[in-house]
Length: 64
Image 1 (cartoon, helix red, strand yellow):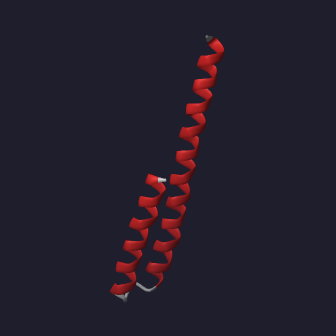
Image 2: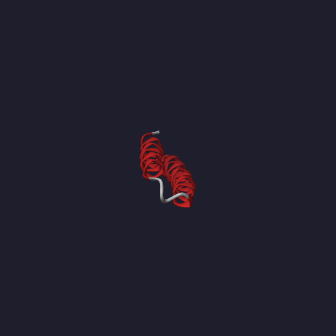
């Protein structure tokens, strides 16, 4: 029984770690997008497109 519990805990820990890594990668991607958008703040269309891209990246990171 102890082996079964260890196996289950390891599996769930691995799954949680993978989800966290995906989210962190998504956040890093968002940071890059925001950095590029801030470089040209006088152009609202760049900011709007950046927000759309950030939303898309985070959505994919949370659902995959």
